[in-house]
Amino acid sequence: MVEEGKPAPTFTLQSDSGEEVSLESLRGRPVVLYFYPRDLTPGCTRQACGIRDAWGEFEKRGAVVLGVSPDSPRKHTKFREKYRLPFTLLADEDHAVAEAYGVWVKKKLLGKTYMGIERSTFVIDADGVVAKVMRRVKPDTHADDVLAALP
Image (cartoon, rainbow, N blue to C red; front, side):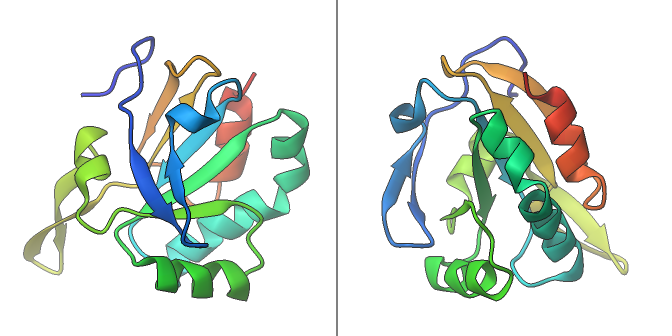
Protein backbone atom coordinates (compact mmCIF):
# COMPACT_ATOMS: atom_id res chain seq x y z
CA MET A 1 0.00 0.00 0.00
CA VAL A 2 1.29 3.46 -0.89
CA GLU A 3 1.95 5.54 2.22
CA GLU A 4 2.68 9.19 2.91
CA GLY A 5 6.37 9.79 3.58
CA LYS A 6 7.48 6.81 1.45
CA PRO A 7 8.88 6.85 -2.11
CA ALA A 8 6.18 6.80 -4.78
CA PRO A 9 6.09 3.70 -6.99
CA THR A 10 7.87 4.50 -10.24
CA PHE A 11 6.22 4.05 -13.62
CA THR A 12 6.43 4.81 -17.32
CA LEU A 13 3.16 5.13 -19.26
CA GLN A 14 2.09 6.31 -22.70
CA SER A 15 0.43 9.73 -22.77
CA ASP A 16 -2.48 11.03 -24.80
CA SER A 17 0.10 12.55 -27.20
CA GLY A 18 1.82 9.18 -27.68
CA GLU A 19 4.91 10.07 -25.64
CA GLU A 20 6.26 8.00 -22.77
CA VAL A 21 6.04 9.73 -19.40
CA SER A 22 7.99 8.47 -16.39
CA LEU A 23 7.72 9.63 -12.81
CA GLU A 24 11.53 9.88 -12.63
CA SER A 25 11.56 12.41 -15.48
CA LEU A 26 9.43 14.78 -13.36
CA ARG A 27 11.75 15.01 -10.36
CA GLY A 28 12.20 18.55 -9.15
CA ARG A 29 8.50 19.39 -9.40
CA PRO A 30 5.49 18.30 -7.36
CA VAL A 31 3.30 15.78 -9.18
CA VAL A 32 -0.45 15.33 -8.79
CA LEU A 33 -1.15 11.77 -9.90
CA TYR A 34 -4.87 11.17 -10.05
CA PHE A 35 -6.56 7.92 -10.98
CA TYR A 36 -10.05 7.97 -12.46
CA PRO A 37 -12.30 5.21 -13.88
CA ARG A 38 -13.08 6.24 -17.48
CA ASP A 39 -12.86 9.06 -19.99
CA LEU A 40 -16.01 10.87 -21.10
CA THR A 41 -18.17 9.78 -18.17
CA PRO A 42 -20.05 12.31 -16.00
CA GLY A 43 -18.02 12.06 -12.77
CA CYS A 44 -14.67 11.84 -14.53
CA THR A 45 -15.55 14.80 -16.73
CA ARG A 46 -16.51 16.93 -13.71
CA GLN A 47 -13.28 15.94 -12.00
CA ALA A 48 -11.09 16.78 -15.01
CA CYS A 49 -12.90 20.03 -15.75
CA GLY A 50 -12.51 21.09 -12.11
CA ILE A 51 -8.75 20.82 -12.51
CA ARG A 52 -8.93 22.63 -15.85
CA ASP A 53 -10.93 25.47 -14.29
CA ALA A 54 -8.39 25.83 -11.46
CA TRP A 55 -5.40 25.41 -13.77
CA GLY A 56 -3.90 28.81 -12.94
CA GLU A 57 -3.53 27.77 -9.29
CA PHE A 58 -1.87 24.47 -10.23
CA GLU A 59 0.57 26.37 -12.47
CA LYS A 60 1.38 28.89 -9.72
CA ARG A 61 2.47 26.00 -7.50
CA GLY A 62 4.57 24.45 -10.27
CA ALA A 63 2.62 21.20 -10.13
CA VAL A 64 2.57 18.61 -12.90
CA VAL A 65 -0.89 17.06 -13.14
CA LEU A 66 -1.27 13.55 -14.57
CA GLY A 67 -4.63 11.83 -14.98
CA VAL A 68 -4.46 8.03 -15.19
CA SER A 69 -7.12 5.57 -16.32
CA PRO A 70 -7.22 2.22 -18.13
CA ASP A 71 -8.46 3.94 -21.31
CA SER A 72 -6.34 3.98 -24.48
CA PRO A 73 -4.17 6.94 -25.53
CA ARG A 74 -6.59 7.54 -28.42
CA LYS A 75 -9.60 7.79 -26.09
CA HIS A 76 -7.57 10.08 -23.82
CA THR A 77 -6.88 12.35 -26.79
CA LYS A 78 -10.61 12.66 -27.53
CA PHE A 79 -11.33 13.43 -23.86
CA ARG A 80 -8.54 15.99 -23.58
CA GLU A 81 -9.49 17.76 -26.82
CA LYS A 82 -13.26 17.77 -26.16
CA TYR A 83 -12.85 19.45 -22.77
CA ARG A 84 -9.65 21.43 -23.53
CA LEU A 85 -7.78 19.80 -20.65
CA PRO A 86 -4.39 21.52 -20.10
CA PHE A 87 -2.74 18.50 -18.44
CA THR A 88 -1.52 15.08 -19.55
CA LEU A 89 -3.59 11.90 -19.49
CA LEU A 90 -1.80 8.55 -19.16
CA ALA A 91 -2.97 5.15 -20.41
CA ASP A 92 -2.69 2.35 -17.84
CA GLU A 93 -4.41 -0.22 -20.05
CA ASP A 94 -3.14 -3.25 -18.12
CA HIS A 95 -3.82 -1.40 -14.82
CA ALA A 96 -0.30 -2.27 -13.56
CA VAL A 97 0.28 1.24 -12.20
CA ALA A 98 -3.18 1.32 -10.61
CA GLU A 99 -2.31 -1.98 -8.91
CA ALA A 100 1.06 -0.61 -7.72
CA TYR A 101 -0.76 2.35 -6.13
CA GLY A 102 -3.47 0.12 -4.63
CA VAL A 103 -6.34 1.69 -6.54
CA TRP A 104 -7.33 -1.32 -8.72
CA VAL A 105 -10.03 -2.69 -6.43
CA LYS A 106 -13.16 -4.83 -6.29
CA LYS A 107 -16.23 -2.66 -6.90
CA LYS A 108 -19.98 -3.24 -6.92
CA LEU A 109 -22.60 -1.73 -9.19
CA LEU A 110 -26.21 -2.85 -9.47
CA GLY A 111 -25.43 -6.08 -7.64
CA LYS A 112 -22.50 -6.97 -9.89
CA THR A 113 -18.93 -7.21 -8.66
CA TYR A 114 -16.05 -6.19 -10.93
CA MET A 115 -12.52 -4.83 -10.77
CA GLY A 116 -11.99 -1.13 -11.43
CA ILE A 117 -10.33 2.11 -10.40
CA GLU A 118 -10.99 3.59 -6.99
CA ARG A 119 -10.95 7.34 -7.65
CA SER A 120 -7.77 8.37 -5.81
CA THR A 121 -5.07 11.03 -5.90
CA PHE A 122 -1.44 11.04 -4.81
CA VAL A 123 0.50 14.24 -4.31
CA ILE A 124 4.17 13.43 -4.85
CA ASP A 125 6.82 15.92 -3.80
CA ALA A 126 9.75 17.11 -5.92
CA ASP A 127 11.93 14.31 -4.51
CA GLY A 128 9.51 11.53 -5.50
CA VAL A 129 8.09 11.00 -2.00
CA VAL A 130 4.34 10.65 -1.42
CA ALA A 131 3.26 13.81 0.40
CA LYS A 132 -0.50 13.13 0.45
CA VAL A 133 -2.76 10.14 -0.23
CA MET A 134 -6.38 10.94 -1.06
CA ARG A 135 -8.71 7.96 -1.54
CA ARG A 136 -12.31 7.87 -2.75
CA VAL A 137 -12.13 11.51 -3.79
CA LYS A 138 -15.26 13.39 -4.79
CA PRO A 139 -15.24 14.68 -8.39
CA ASP A 140 -16.94 17.97 -7.51
CA THR A 141 -14.44 19.03 -4.82
CA HIS A 142 -11.35 17.25 -6.13
CA ALA A 143 -9.49 20.29 -7.52
CA ASP A 144 -9.94 22.31 -4.32
CA ASP A 145 -8.98 19.34 -2.15
CA VAL A 146 -5.79 18.77 -4.14
CA LEU A 147 -4.86 22.45 -4.08
CA ALA A 148 -5.24 22.39 -0.30
CA ALA A 149 -2.76 19.49 -0.18
CA LEU A 150 -0.15 21.16 -2.41
CA PRO A 151 2.55 23.31 -0.80
